[in-house]
Image (tube, rainbow, N blue to C red; front, side):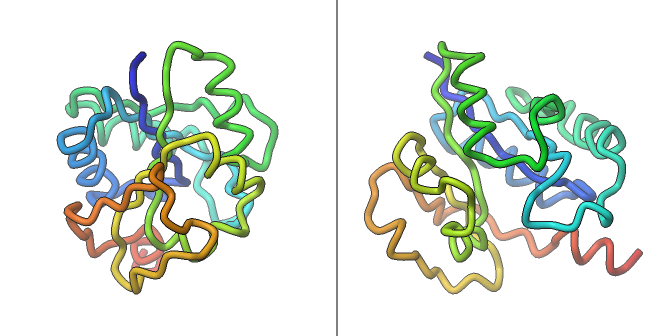
Amino acid sequence: MAKIGIYGGSFNPVHFGHVGLAKWVIEHTDLDELWLLVSPNNPLKPVESLAPEQERLAAVREAVKDIPHVTASDFEFALPRPSYTANTLRELQKRYPEHSFTLVIGEDNIAIFDRWKEYEYILSHFRIFVYPRRGSNGERLAIIGDRKNVVFLADAPYFDISSTQIRAKV
């Protein structure tokens, strides 16, 4: 059974932090592959601020083309919108029963994880890798607790950049 990491996001735009983290995760964890799922419509972000999905997908494909075992994916493009992670993970399991899936998220998402649709389902059924983000205070919500399937990637590098910062400068 192949271990596949799911690193979802708007990638609006993709940047060296996304690429550096993808490379680090594939080199320093037990994942066989890492799929960067470009989200067409994150329910926690305003859709009007997004570049067209095909442009974001093409940029992610270009950014990771030389990283072995890392691919860009439009998997969510054919799913109902907005893109809820629980629904995506269910559909991935259904279409790829030969794989096990690990969700890769930033530490900033831990603070709002209880706002995610069906976060309990995600916590109960999937391993989660959490990478550090600047500005996060290491806070781990009570809903996460000491679950063995939630792995904090404490040795992962910080990338002091965000898509929000890039858009603000443009």
